[in-house]
Image (tube, protein in one colour):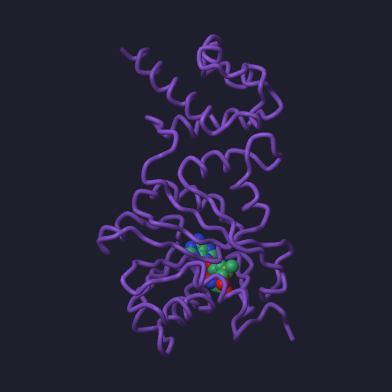
Length: 273
Ligand code: SAM
């Protein structure tokens, strides 16, 4: 049998299609999500409905965002799910989650077995909507989950760790082996829960500056902060903030990156005054 065909559908590599086939894993994910009838759930990439069916059974309505036209059409005619579904046949990277939360009158619960080829940019897109999101449950490459939860001093610690931990509390839920999918991916997978903070732990006045600082610092991982940030942060600023200028990006905490972003915000304003 061709291992790229699942339930009569030929899996499209360009859409990152690896369909869940393992009932135990599917049930574990659904119980981690714990959907309640009155909540506004949104699935990214429902595919052939492995998660959509058991989640949809527990709800009166469910929104899904699926890029593949054939799969969206299949869901539309699904015997019991079809009438409950609101299907957006579009790119989740361009989806306006705030508009949907507004329409539903409550923050969204987003979930999905994400297409791995776009999972990191997709999470960055979702971080810009954390004010409209109650929680997220995602299947990701295990390596990406390791990066999400990594702390300073670890090899996996990087820009994704800092930005994700700025926005969300992150809880790994479950590890998933390749055989649980058809076709089997070449990597191990894991499910993670991300819960946006209602009050940020380390408030920053302009999150774009946090994004810029982490891009600069981790873009020159091997350099000390004094060198990697020299065109953004004045020499004395690191001492002023009690941040050791000889640290490398991977040894700087989320709280320290937030301090640096706030320093930059303040001094940019001063420069403009
Ligand atoms: N949920 C199904 C499952 O668990 O078996 C399918 C998961 S599969 C890993 C990823 C799904 O995301 C596919 O259905 C794919 O067509 C869809 N997809 C890929 N890129 C997408 C995008 N940019 N926006 C929305 N859906 C996308």
